[in-house]
Amino acid sequence: MVIVVSLIPIPYQIIALTQERNSLFEYPPDRLAAIIREIGFTCTSCARCCTREFNGHVFLLDHDVSVVKTIDPGALEPAPYPEFCDQNGIFYVSGYALRAKGDVPGSCYFLESGRCRIYDNRFSICRVYPYMLHREPDERGRIDWRQLSGLNQHGEYHHDISIEESNTIAIKVKEYENAILTQEISFLEFIRDYFAKHNLKHVQKVYDDRMRRFLKGETITVMVYCAGQLEKNQVKKSMQQPL
Ligand code: SF4
Image (cartoon, rainbow, N blue to C red):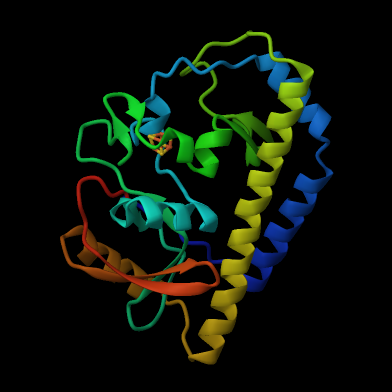
């Protein structure tokens, strides 16, 4: 697995994400609501979106992590693809994800016989999915907005969605995307200051060496940024884990 770590200096990453968040603020919610109505997506409870076969991992916002900790902390694992590794071989990543089971599709820890066993307490991403509001390159490399994940790969389309419902979804999607960007900006600001204070620096060679050893079965230390602080995790490669 090739893990691409951004070589862009942290202050520029912060500026880029802040600009991204400004673009998100400017995106009119009624435009997103109109697209939601046009697509007319309806969930058919296929539960494919709750598997790693379909979605890489279920990323959690900080307040979701507090909910998981009250339900079952064993469901948590550091989010995959750590952003940094210092000269001492310690990795740093923004946030937690949900652990997967060891079955073939990589079902979410909370998926039981095709149903979410904590549905009423499901997490932010589970509530807004498959809607999104990201800017990504299209097939020609042109940056544009994406509003739906997995179009035509799950669910049904062209159902009637009321203006009121589409407006509610649009606002929730914007709130979610804002929370993700804000969490990532906060992580970068924290790491910038933490590295400066402790005389640490990201070393790509150390990152690559440790990651190779990790993939061969060695345990690594991953500091997870959550709720404004770092939490230490010892991580060993497992079949379920995409790290
Ligand atoms: S928590 Fe529930 S809804 Fe969310 S991914 Fe897991 S099984 Fe699916």
